[in-house]
Length: 301
Ligand code: NAP
Image (cartoon, rainbow, N blue to C red; front, top):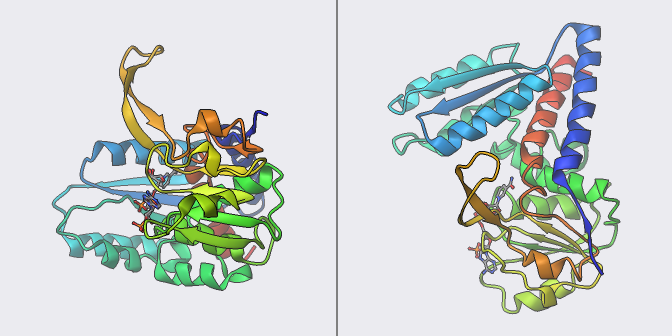
């Protein structure tokens, strides 16, 4: 048996088209478009490439986008003042501070300074609380878990009463996706188990999963014999395991591997996300969706 591939690259295009259409409709009715500011401190190459991708996507969707690049030695006070300026700016609906920040800046202090109603990353404690309460309280679900849930829903996976096992308990992936999958509602309503490094028998938990979500950051951690035949496997892991020369550009590019032994797992799973091309493309997509939802919230739509 060969599993159905859940392609984030295709689902991303579907969602971006939906967002673009809605942006055009709102613009025609109200003259307003979603506004997203990305604040980049310093010149970390990985951060620059993430921010560039976010800006390109926002631009493609017709958003008002602002890139605010600040020197690495900006003071914490000045950064907080900048955030306050965007909190008060009516043309901005989403504020994103690219992490990591330089060591002299307290990340926590910066994240809580963002107006929770413009916190499209969903990292503010108020939005974490809203996620925990669930239902209509949820304003901005964190982007990677929200993308995982979209992949599950749009691939037609039934989750009501399903056994969902989440490998990993980080604040950005494991914990929020576990909370989201146990809430009542579409693409959720599941029985959720969370496993981590202190779990006694990882394999036996994974084997029970109708939906297995793996976010451990360990290449090839999940073996094919840990997978229940027919299960839906969502591999969040993005691990650099080497370099190769790109046939297109002739330049070295990283070889990426997920947390699941993909080649063997696809012969057992019912559906599976590849790495790259599965969960990865969904994160920025959901950031755009949160920013559109913020515009709608601020317009009272
Ligand atoms: P993280 O903060 O390092 O957390 C990893 C979690 O996995 C921890 O809870 C850890 O358990 C658990 N874990 C690690 N090794 C394990 C093992 N051998 N057995 C059982 N549990 C184990 O990582 P993260 O930020 O959640 O990211 C996880 C992976 O997803 C990474 O590869 C990352 O690059 C990728 N990721 C991808 C996207 C995307 O595609 N957009 C976004 C975010 C992350 P303990 O708590 O016990 O230490």
